[in-house]
Amino acid sequence: MSKFTVADIKHLYATEAEKHGIAGTSTIQDMRTRDLEVRAISSYLRDKLKVLEVGCGNGYMAAQLIQRFDITLDAFDFSEEMVALAKRQLIENQRGRATFFVGDVLELDHESEYDLILSVRCLQNLTSWELQKSALRNVVRALRPGGEFVMEECFWTGLNNLNEARLELDLEPIQESWHNCFFHEEQTIEFMGSLRCAYQDQNAFLSGYYFGSRVLLPALMPKGKKVTSANRLNDYFANLPAAGDFCPMKILRFKRQALGSSVSRTGAANQGR
Image (cartoon, rainbow, N blue to C red; front, side, top):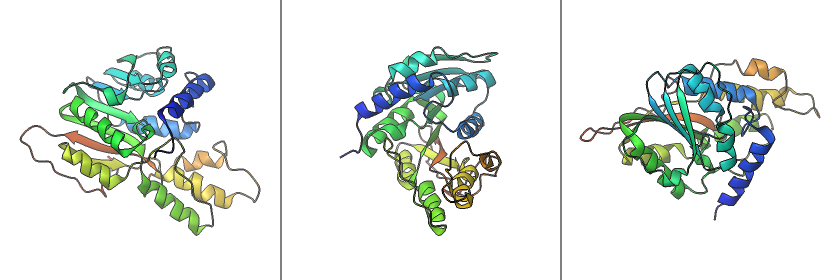
């Protein structure tokens, strides 16, 4: 039985919409994380692509991307409140164009349409691995042969590594978020391969920042003093290189294979771009 329901997720994002509006703090309050996320996602784009963003939230990421790239971006979310906000995003000097609409990844029905599909902390909000597999099938079907899926979601590998480091400093473990169903990395790679969507590489772009802010900072902080994302030391930690794998959030990149081609697997240890 799932620890959360679809109704729980809808309520969460209605609350986020009301609280944060069109701000980048919507769904993730640490703006350093958000800035690093935008930078990482941007590294996979180039001009003239047709792109789909699965779970666009309030449109903050989409707005950043069409300012940077001359792309055609379709972006949807199943939260009506979030899509209403996305349509209000103030996008200055945009190079591309975005269309926002209400939709459900479990009902996505496109065939070989997109050059690139993004999910940014979206599929982890589905209540089970079975539903996540259905979503992944729909994503792969919507990709053109040779198209890429850039999957930024939470994975157990990074959280386990982070908690092992915290344990060595007598820090309490960080738990999986109540509204998330984290992915198992090897299981995900194997399943995507079965869909003829080959694993390319991964990018643990938050690893340095999370090691600093979630391991070093709480260990260094004077007893009784609260650790928050507002701590000044985090400005330093956000500039640490993304070494290791110490954050649940990371990017796995997949490529849809053309018919008749063999599905290869680039080594799972390959990180970055």
